[in-house]
Length: 104
Image (cartoon, rainbow, N blue to C red; front, side, top):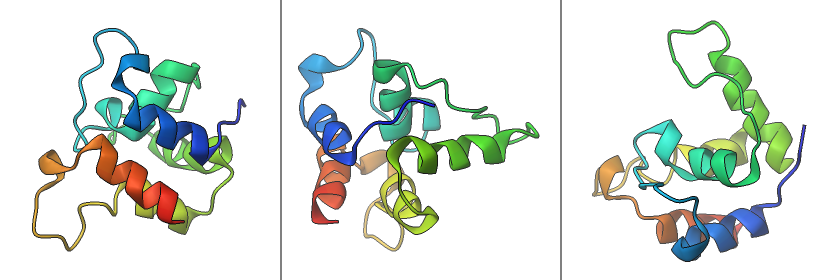
């Protein structure tokens, strides 16, 4: 599986002009969040993103492999930006996710 660095992801999140054509950001949707952006931009072929699909766990494990990160760090980036915060997931911006990555 192809690997991408968190530095590359952070850069991509901050540079919308480099996003795939037609990509629309939505942190609350896995296809349109940081993982979906990386998947589309870098052709990662992550596992299924359908939570009702038996391969759902493959998707989350793939994120750890692609970025060479622990499950804890994965959760901070791809879930935790909105957890216990005074805003909703739909309000999370790409820059907010990049800030979390850069702070690691």
